[in-house]
Length: 520
Image (cartoon, rainbow, N blue to C red; front, side):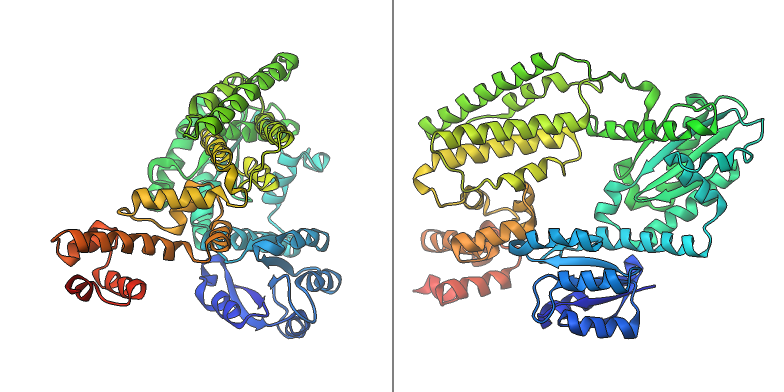
């Protein structure tokens, strides 16, 4: 287990971080807590932890000052910043002090798993480097990067005529179940399977890199059955994690005729994996099956298409403002991505760039018209574009974004009202009978839970779930006054999962229980 200390000036947060999160699942144990940077430095001297999780804004010594001191005096210790949304911008400065990750308050388990599993893997790699990593793993790391190639010239005998790199990426799995034990299990299964074929492999980041070698061409026909067998092995041993084969993707590069070309095969495997962006239903993607086009398309034609589409979307948005009605943006968004259809359309980076450009031009044009968008934080929007990992999801997000802009335009008389709050309120009023959680509504609006929770509280003065309960109680009051339904039935009809919880919330809202209310 790796040692970690927690630093935060709020006792309840320190205690929650220390006891609520499953540190052992990601390979760590909490060996101490401190309430400021000065106290943390004393604790570091005593415990010599592998990692420090620290708040940014603290008295006596801030988290950034602590990170700087650690970088100077304890360069092996990894630092992770924990920050509230409002002061998150300060944490960006910490990159100069070697910070390994940023986590947002309130800390969510998925974010916790993602950062600390990667950190444990990095610490493991550091240890291997100090202890003398296996020659095979160090060699494979050099070969895929194209580093130190001359020193491996004698390693491969004359019979080796072909090499081929495959990448098994578990990014999606580790976003949800990023546990140290799961990663270890995958490594053990890989060793058991690929060692039979004398095939070297390496766990690198969230991916398993496999280098197949043979005296003859490593063809797709020969390679594909082994990949399927390994996938079957993962599913058989880690069932729930790999159901429907949706939690991982395999990218396979073209064969390389010499060890010097392994780097090229690796880059092709990365490119093949990235095609998942365009087709989320494909699991195993061979580079040789992709029609890879250069960037020689008519840029002027694409730019004209972009501007033409901006004009159409702007017109559509203005129409929504005049009619004060909801407009459909799905078809416009689909048409906007027409030039990018197929793998050869444009690289992913350019697709994201086109989407960013669309948003920027629209915002600029509406700003010129004196129109405001209280719901749109441009930096947040542009950052979101680069965090989406599929074209389908990008289309969904852009459609939602245009609907949000439309909502702001319709409610220009409420310039200071955030339309995310208005949209969430509308959703609750229309769907109060259904299960509604903070996570559900945040995902629906493509917002981080903590961010949505903060803006809702700021706009309304109450927590989102309290608002949901308030709406449900209002509906329950109407039913109790105007129907003969049993109280338990009323509770179910307005969306409460628990009858006792309904009684409690109803009394908090009205001052009396449902039974007493009905008798009045």
